[in-house]
Image 1 (cartoon, rainbow, N blue to C red):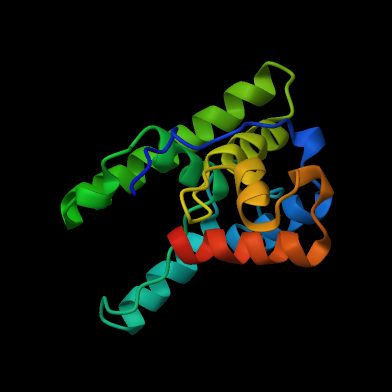
Image 2: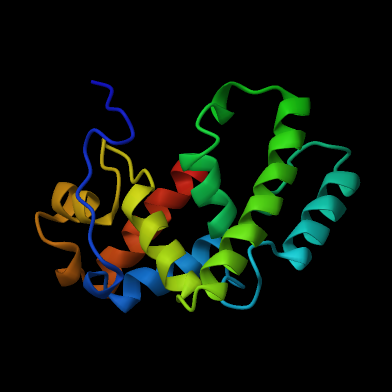
Length: 164
């Protein structure tokens, strides 16, 4: 059975998400999340180097958590795009990622917490589970606040295999 991206989701606040889950997602998806402004120049340089080295085969991604949040919630048709559309979307994601983080910070908000909370509430964890609360209930029969370190790591790895 197919579920829409908002069909099986229970949102929770960042305070309800264990730090182990937050750290696991950041470690797997965007290790410099707390150091950049929405885009990761080091990640981009690495991805370009790998693409050139491999002549365009076995390319690596350089999307930050902020960019992934935008891709999954703004650019919802990305799975059907061609290479030129993908290239254009990547630049749009980068621009919007910087604008989003800058705008949240300018309002005196904690941009990283807001972005991570929204990402963890929207990411696909597989089995029709969108968001960390639904994933915790689906896979472990518990609330996300009660996830252990190993359960958090398993869920983060599962999210990575879906869209990493």
